[in-house]
Image (cartoon, helix red, strand yellow):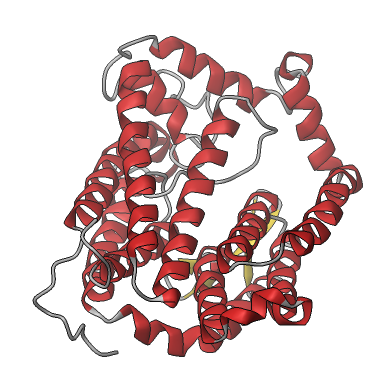
Length: 368
């Protein structure tokens, strides 16, 4: 890929600085949330910390690379990226897929484990941006948006089969936002949204585990040692934090009370150790990243860059929102990591790479 021609133009460094700062904070919190469990399970309290550190280093390197390339060159890879994503998602459902806790969401290649759904989200954003930017009038015709609907549908089905309802929701939300940003007619959006709203209750009813999670969300105290256990432990952690928290590394819920404390429910540990004030400050930084990201997209002088920027920030914003709502018991429990913070190398590397592209986009716009 070629480097930016306007090498003398500086992008929005605040995005890169904020992303790296949040990722370093995430590294610290992964250690805090995991060291007790890691020492018992692996005999090494730095087990998750070292994995996350490798992801952070690779993420920074990939972010530097994507920040230096011309984001327009990514447009040429839209079909390659989406085909690779579909193939990887399909392979997950074969014996090559790795199953954990009843879900088959990972591929293991030697010592490396990757989660294809994390890659698929951004590949879909690149595809939508490239497809609509080639001919913006495509959003005015139903046949014009049909390829996006078909590709998005295929991704959602493959991810749903893992099963992974949370990432499916993210991809679905991304598709709707990309259609809206591309200028699709309102009646087409209604034609898409209404069947989805009808299908969601059916998907919950058809899968017993989803129905159990819904019941646990409605009344977690009805099954405090069953489906409601995780949510109750999360609420205990958040409640224990009070205004200023119990102090860094002093969480009690991570002592094998709160499942997935280092990944999907790391926000609970943050709330317990840093309190309401510390959690609020974290979300102010995350909110800054989202607002700054949308401003970069809106100021971009290129339609592909505008759509790609919208897609990148949408994925980040949706995941942050859904994770926060789950942890606080505002929506039914579902497994979704907190971007840049939760344990998981694939997610961290892919998000940091995407934000590198967002920085590249910021070079091709007005001063934001």
